[in-house]
Length: 495
Image 1: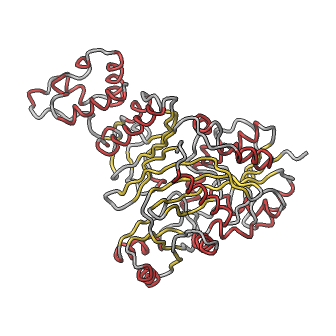
Image 2 (image 1 turned 60 degrees about the horizontal axis):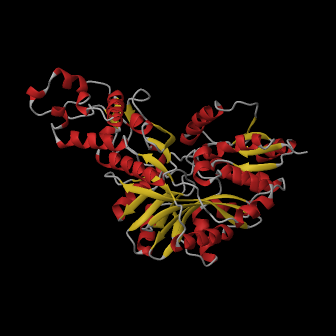
């Protein structure tokens, strides 16, 4: 009986495939994708090191050979039950192997529709679905020609083969377009590709959503639905601030899901997951891009289990193993158990940090599930956020009381927007009194003390109902409005 299941580049959220496979009594095999030397290779090597350290069972790891026939023979010799696509770097090789080995998966002949943004949107156009006008550009003249043709100064420049919003520019006008094109044409590609192919698209203004699906035998089913929070920074970059799990399906969401299903079918995606990014404007939904893999972001299985009652990799695996499972799953109404949020943190600028308030804030939140942040003690510098690869943290919030989860997410959004020094700083938590005569030894100790310890003490004091002036003197609290605002935020976190 076939026991092995190959996962091509099981990084990010796809890493959960490995445990899911073990739990079902099968043997997971990792196929590491071949990635040329470059930025993406360095990132991937680091992620592999971290992820592999969590594997506590024997596992076979195979490296993709640049000669496809060599890789095909090696995987064929394993006689696998399935070849599953893992992360973005495993889409092409995983699709091709499954097709050549006559295993469940998408037809490799459709790979351009599934991975190349320009082909993707031309396919939607041919299918009579709404699409985004765009084309590949190779020169400044191509860029200016597109600008003139669309008669719209708001456009998007991106890599034909890209990931994590790296190299994406939201552009207004000719000058910004030329500058962005020249920057990206000579920049290092995420995948180490020598030819950096770029494309322009008309820019759609509206609400952005994630629609995750799993298809089997040409029938897509919804696995999860999220709404994005985004922000344009002073430097002109659009950064992701977070995701909200959509729990109620109204008419707008129904139209989006129906459009997403039609998109999946039009692209020739018959068997496997799609992480789709969509926009809804006054004209309705439109595809930004489809990614033929599970959602990225290393979303924890346990977080999704608490939110949905299942996690994406488990549904994908069971659907690929058993069409009957997929059929039953597809027929169930989408009904999340709890409302979940994913908070992505960003930094407005490069800065040195010597303290971090975010860790004790998160630990004291009811809805904090897990995540990571760049905090003092782990790093002494953080860089300006320009894409998902340069965000300063990502945490997952969920609680039985959805209103509590929402309020704590909003508190984090407020802190990040108005009080960023509370998150990462090289200065004290509080501003000193303007009058030096108020700088008592007690206040000086607080101003020079450890931020994390101080925040923990303040929240603990509020929760116990103790006299807060035993922790922070009234003269320091009332020294300025900023200090009073910080205390109010910490009081809200204490519940």
